[in-house]
Each structure stands twice: as C-alpha cells, then as structure tokens.
Length: 205
Image (cartoon, rainbow, N blue to C red; front, side, top):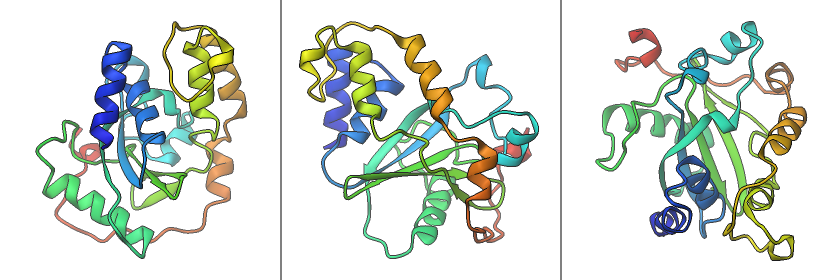
C-alpha cells in the first residue's frame, strides 16, 4: 500500500525523492513507520552520526529537510513504544530487509511512526531514542502542496503542479522549529539501550 503511494509520487513528480516519499508516508492509509536517514551531501557532513548533545555543541538542530525516507513499512502491533524502537534498531542492524537500501540504523537516524493519524519522530541518540515533538509540522502536507500547486484553489492533498516560494517556506519553518535544547529539556529520561555486539556507524568512523 505504502509502496504504491511512493510509486505514484515518483511517477507524477519525476522521482521527487525525499519530498515524495515523506509525503506518501504522511498521507498513507493505515498505520506505518518510516526510517529516515541524512542525505549524503556536504551540507549534512557534520550532522551525520552526531548525537543530540554533539549537535547542541555545534549550535545545530535536527532539520527534517536534510533527511530522506529510505524505508516505509506497516506498523506492527505493539504495546510498548520503547521496546518497539529497540526492535527496529536491532532489525535494521542484524536482519535488514532485502528492500532496505540505507545503511545500518545508527546515531542521527530517525524512526517516524504514523499511528491513528498522528505522527511522532524518534531520534536515534547515542544510548537511546529521543522523541522530537514538532519535527514534522502538522501542516507539512499543506505547506508542501502550496509550494508545488499553481492554483491555490486546488489545495486538496495532491501535489500536482510547479514549485514556488521554497525559500520563504524554508525560512518560516526554521523560525517555527523548537530548538534542540528546548526539546531535550522537555524530554523524560530515556531507557539506556542494552549493550550488544552491534557496532554503530559512529564508532566505525
């Protein structure tokens, strides 16, 4: 189902990459989760495999626009969010699906969960996952469509026209995003990830 949505975005928009896949995930039916990893570009060099504390020291923040969706799958039934996130961490290190094209799940990656229409994002930090409230704005789809829609009378959840006002939206989003410091202050202490034989990409640099 999600894959069909992705293929639709690619066909309509000429393989939009991150934008199409993220919007497909947000607009998909049913509950799903997605793996997001930083784009391999010069702009993200300092962010790659950095913990939230490292980002804070570099006066940097998590920027959703620097990420690309590398995997989408149906959300399995679970009763504990922390346990589910740890199972995702192990799966995408020790038993990666054949259709997963990203690198092993590592520090700086994000697991996004869409459940009952609500989206939450979890940053893979050095010892646990940290939730980042507001990382993906609730009006992300509408904003994305307004970027690409020529006729504002056709704001209908389907992006189908040319790009416009990208710089203005980027500046507005940056101003509205909460800082990493504020996010950390508001976060409860997370459970320490159990020691394992998994090697972080951060440690292998």
